[in-house]
Image (cartoon, rainbow, N blue to C red; front, side, top):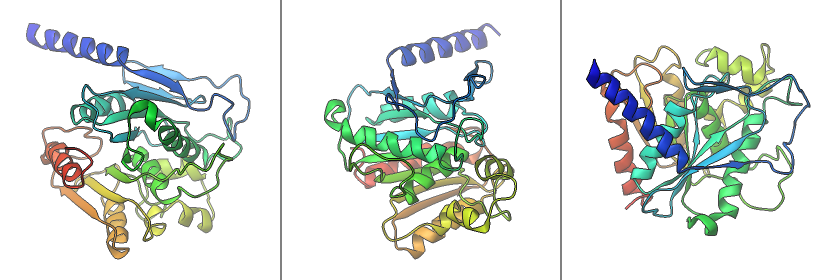
Length: 302
């Protein structure tokens, strides 16, 4: 019992120390695009569950490794487009990436909501596009390689990451310059990919597109249908026994990449279920090791 309490205290101290070493950056200092004023809609932080919801002022929290290697990544936490698992699939992921020499940016993105957005289907994508543009613009400041900017997403954050990988040229807001919003690579972990009702995560689909979306909107945000020869390479992770987001999402994206002759690596684990984050007791606990090997082979880490 005493040992467990000590470990818990150490975990809290470590997380607090890590956050103290990070810097939170306002993503839209000149005003959030596509926004509707709503004074009754305020951000909610659930410290017990490590969740954030009702985000209307997006931020990037940067974690700088001791020995940066020039590679950077935008982290998109999951949460079914209802909340963000900001610690488990955000800050902890940043700490892991730092151990690989990767400069990590945790994206606290807006969750689609008609009460604060003119068009909720593009709100998260606006934040993802601007986060990549921001990193490219500030690459010299952070000592980053503009050709080694990746995106990693979990669950619904995986949908956002794959959307940023396939819709990077969509004009969803008016950027201040011509800086590209295209990531150079993506890592998708038990991602929502498709809006096809046969395999879609219902909650993510309903929150992003509404209850009865048009077939055109469904196709647009079914990212397996948006892959082409210019889509970034990808590392894909899922568990066969995922009862939250069907594994067919990842399989569909992988096959689309393969058919477009885009480099991709796929890991489907026997056990892991949904939301395993950086690992659990199932076979999926090894995915970070496999990912590290993929990053090294592709020259994103030394």
